[in-house]
Image (cartoon, rainbow, N blue to C red; front, side):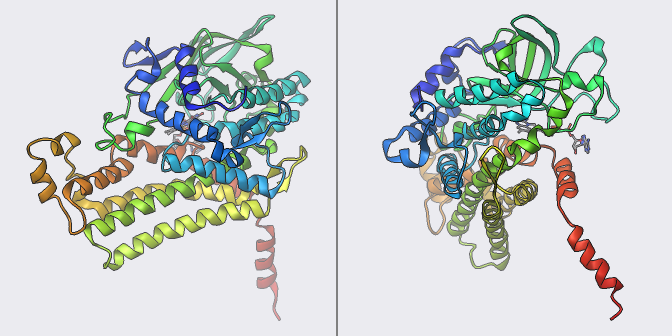
Length: 485
Ligand SMILES: Cc1cc2nc3c(=O)[nH]c(=O)nc-3n(C[C@H](O)[C@H](O)[C@H](O)COP(=O)(O)OP(=O)(O)OC[C@H]3O[C@@H](n4cnc5c(N)ncnc54)[C@H](O)[C@@H]3O)c2cc1C
């Protein structure tokens, strides 16, 4: 097996029979025919088709060292700056298909699993078997072009640092037992975006450092299982698909990525899928030493360049459509977004320029500019949504539907909503896109996503604060103030 196409993706997910709960019921039919998932699955299938397109092979694939088959570029362990650039361009090629709105397109986890697979050595501190399992899993996922969802955090029961869960009412998933076949996991985890529409689930500890205590050990675990593993359930939130019409709901009809709560009901995880089992030291080294942060944030920043470009495109189209380009505050707002775009490109460039080859021969982008990029973007993205609102004003809600334009009132609407450049229908088509990007429930979730998907921005800021080397600057100031010359 090697890269798959869109149909193979859809068939595989439909046949899986994952236990997905939506609006109080377990979904029985094909997910690709369900209103909450079909738009997303079609969009994701297009990504696989693009990857399989013979004219895109040079960019979107590389030759697997083990099978000799073409595999996705997002699985590529970069060895050279050319590799890093190729991966960035491949990610952006996919991101353009969704205007950057798919946060969890398959490349996200493909790159994650590459980072963890190539550095699997870290896991051998606990057991060589775990390291082998991780390497095998990376190969298995890559060679079968599997799509993964993931859950890295625990339920929001009590976030006090002093909270210890009452063992009598277990909520956060834990390993509760072992058999000859594997470990038994019971409890819940958050938050598997695309939990319903992927092949497998990767479970890793949260990025937080765990204390070296017996009570922390049950939280230090990592494994991967197919989404249809017995006892595994995915509970969906409400769907934000506004409807099927691309005119009415240009983004949510295509790119609504369902978030799910994952419940493990005495789930058996086979030993060959266990990567970590209680070792706090390994838990605490995992993300930093593996290059996970650098590789995934490089992917995220690359995707974000496309997303900012898309927002810039929407803003400029609004400005042209209602002819507000002469006003200085409009220039200032657009300049703000241009600065954001150039900053994002600069963060990536800097991370690639000072990338270093790690001990496993993988070229790892410099984490500093990328941590800065993630922190910056969590604040910049809501500002872009705000700028769309400030430019679009009432146009964002003067938005009759496709049915209205197809009705007897259509001519009225085409006439009375026209602008000096386009007819009313064309104007509404654009403004509905702007609304879906900035105001709709889809747009609101996108803002929440960009603030939190990679972790709490407050705690990310603390990591940056603690890791960034400022000794030389402090020293410069001390010698300046002590210099009486
Ligand atoms: C749309 C969306 C999609 C997501 N998709 C995924 C996914 O696919 N997979 C996945 O694993 N996760 C996913 N996440 C979860 C994401 O990783 C978390 O939202 C993030 O790590 C923050 O954790 P939390 O939501 O539990 O917030 P909490 O940790 O509960 O934080 C809530 C508030 O309390 C504050 N707070 C809590 N603890 C501390 C502390 N120790 N120090 C300072 N302040 C604190 C926070 O600053 C924040 O203001 C997603 C989140 C969103 C919103």
